[in-house]
Length: 174
Image (cartoon, rainbow, N blue to C red):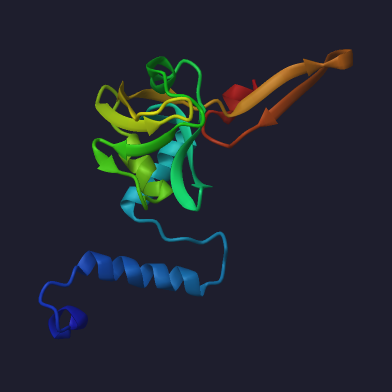
């Protein structure tokens, strides 16, 4: 309250101040496992741990190409909306809903691409085999993350690799 009343700017966001204070307190613990999450961050973390969320079905990353950071499709999950729409691994996403991805963070890009199943998003991609950008409109779907990969090796040895832990991992192992 004191900062809000005495600070030189008239409109100080009280929620931002409180979140900043709590984040500072958790950082002061010097504990790599303690972290403050805003409600939005918590919701996204819960989406990841449930293994289901609304999205396109792509894995993205920021890669450096000719000295520039590019939002890049690393892989496309088979059977997902992105797969069915023709998105390919290696595509550079240069626009999301008509807005440039230049300088976008990975978290911000995920936020823009994920969404309510049934809603549409338009991405514009550059593909090395094409001279012009390609516009792709994709209807978001429910993405089920497969947390395990398994196969039978020689001598009837079963192999299970856990890619990530989520609420569905025990069922996936079974």
